[in-house]
Each structure stands twice: as C-alpha cells, then as structure tokens.
Image 1 (cartoon, one colour):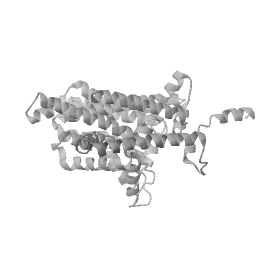
Image 2 (cartoon, helix red, strand yellow):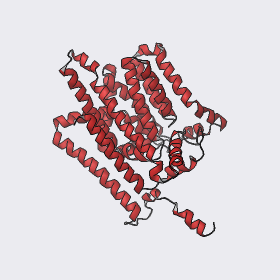
Image 3 (cartoon, one colour):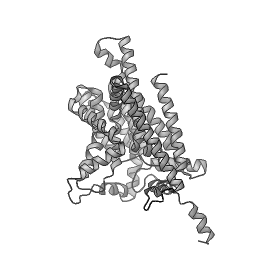
Image 4 (cartoon, one colour):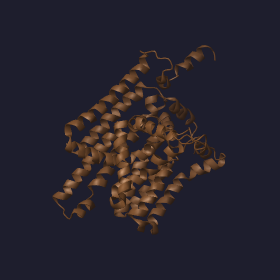
Length: 398
C-alpha cells in the first residue's frame, strides 16, 4: 500500500478514536461557553471571530442535540481534512517535478522525488496527529483552532502552488482560505505577515501583479462582517484580544517558561526537532525555497508570543501551535530520513509515542467517568458535564 493509502487509514483510525473520546468526555469550560454563546448566531463574539461558533451551533440545530459528541463532529471532520492537507502539501513541497528538473534528470528520478515527497507527507501527517495540542485538542474539541488549522493548511498549499505555478485559481484559493482563517481566529494575521516576507524573497515579481492583491481583497471581503460587528459593538472583540498583550511587570524568565509550556503541549521530543528544523531553515535562507517558505509562515506565532510573555502573564501556551504547524512538513521529511538511517529505533519511538497518547487518553477518560483516584482539586473535573443539574433544579421547583 502506498503513502496515500496509509494516510487514508490514519485519517479513519484517528477519527474513530476522536469519536470515542468525544462520547466519553464531556465538554470543557471553553467548549461549554462556545456552545452556549453560539445559540445566538452573530457575525462576531466577545473574544473570537464566529466560524467555530457557527460550526457547533449548526451541528446542534441540525441534529437537535448539544451532546458533546454531536457538537464536536465538525471539528473532528475538519481535522481529518487537515491531516490530508498536511500530507498533500508536504508531498507537493518535497516531491514536485520542478525539484527533479533541478537535478537535470527526469523519468526514474521524477518518480523517486515523488515517492520521497509522499513519504515525507505521510510522516508529517502522522506527527501532526501525535502532537497533543494539535491532534487532541484542535482535532476534536469545540475551539477556534480546528477551523483555523484547516484554513491555514489550505492557505499554505494554495500559496505554494500559486507561487510555483502562477494560476489564478491558486491565488483565489489562497484568498478564500485566508478569509476563513481570519473568520476562525485573529492571530491568523501573523501567518499572512510571514507569507508577505516569504513571497518578497521567493517571487518578488508577484508583488507587482494583480493576483496576490486580488487574493487579499477576497480575504478582506470574507472578514469584513466581523469588522462591521466590532464597529457596532465598540470594538469589543479587538479590544479584548489586544488587552492580552498589555504591559505588566517585566519578567525575563517568563519566555523560558512559555517555551517550556509550548514544548510540553507539542511533546518535548517532537518540539525539539521542530524547533531545530525551523531555526535551520531560517539560517539557510531563501536558497532552499520550501523550508524558507515554511519557516516564515510559522515565524510570527513562534516568536511573537514568546516575546510578549516577557511582560504579559496572559500568554497561553497553545497560541504558538499554528506557527509550529508549518514546520511539520520539515519534520515529516526528517522522520522519513531517520527511518532510512535508523529504522528500528525510529519506529520504536513513533510507536511508543502513539501508545503513550492512546493509553494516557484512555486512562484520563476512565478516571473522568469512574472517579477511581478521588483526587482533591482534580483538573479532570473540567471535563464533567453539568447537564444533570437541570433535572435536580426542576425537581426542587427552581
């Protein structure tokens, strides 16, 4: 079976696991807030753009239920799409025929490059599903990060094809995906700033052509209702998010804590090669086109939130995840190379990581439902639904 087939099985298997978790674990605090607030459909909400609210509310109305497994279904489906996009984009980046032309040979060499790109794409998709902040929370919870990650990967794929092939449809696709990303989370703008830097280095001639500017206009039109909503509501959403970067007491140790938290959320043994590959891509410059593009797409979220944490205690560790998202194609290529050099050790490490996640999530779900340890201040309580309270209150006439 080829890489495409394995990715198909990966998507099916991980989606089934997420469905089981969605059934076994109640909505967390943030999820409950989003489901409740989403009962009123609007062009904007207090802290985020509306797309994730629309997804959960639309599914709840379609099925007639706000059960956790129901409202999480769109986000599970979106991460299945994200897994495929990660595979397809990585395959494009490292298996394109243009790369073969640089070698000066076609035929067998072209097929070899294509196979190498597909292998890199497969392992990028596998690693994406193994990172808890992406594969677990983004992959199955009612959060803005689900549609954000899918839209950003779509944007990256379309942008790469637009730069290399120059077709209008890819520029327009990049604009649509950019607009959807902005409808998901405001921090998407950091990715677009990095894209502008990358395009200015890799294809500066595009900046004097209409395609990228029309794509930007499409994105702006899709996002314009959110701006209108903020104008009508005293810029509430923009002001709330901007306030999170407000200055407090300077703490030079805080960035180190933030980096450690990001590493924990990604898994330290995945974060370390991600960070090293990202830094190496920046250091080598635009001579290596694909790594340079990936490095700059991820630059803003990776760097900015670490810097801001030096004076703002409100920085959350998962905010940098969309930046590291763009380094997973490099990680996939690196893993494919490690499997050639040290196949046994690398496969054991990958299998151990997968087992660690499955067993850990299984134990957490069991503890949440059975309360075997009876811990004081148990953080898993945030995953308990309070829906039985409705019947208790009704029984007391409240």
